Image (cartoon, rainbow, N blue to C red; front, side, top):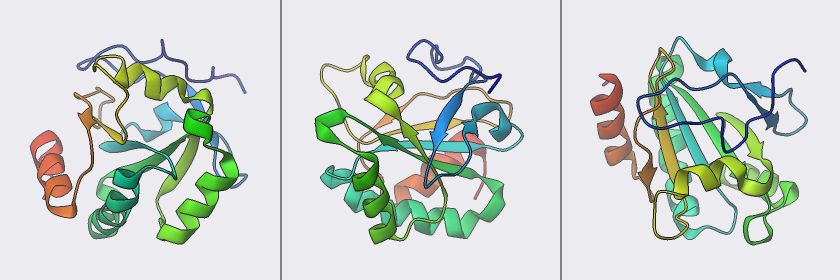
Length: 160
């Protein structure tokens, strides 16, 4: 793969361009190249199977993804290694919640660690909005319901 894996240093700060790096694919899928998401707004959601807030928000993400179709890309990023999170647990959780948007792994939680580094303590879930030109918005810490997620998408992307 000619594109480097994503690392904590791949992401700079809000207002900067999303780098061209890769995540591990989910369920044996090919790697996810972040630059391939450019051209449409993207919602990156960092989650783990043991996270109560992640469990509560996953149906909202699926509902909003289904309603918006291809107008917004959704990528769920399973944070591996954090409190024992494994690929098997992540896959089982995704199957149980019926998520149909793109999923990927963050081995060792390296990217996740970059985003929570600005807070006093680790927070899960974290959602990052990236506009169609690849510019990273401020991360959102904590869960969304469908209404608040749609409102954030409307605010950040102008999509209703």
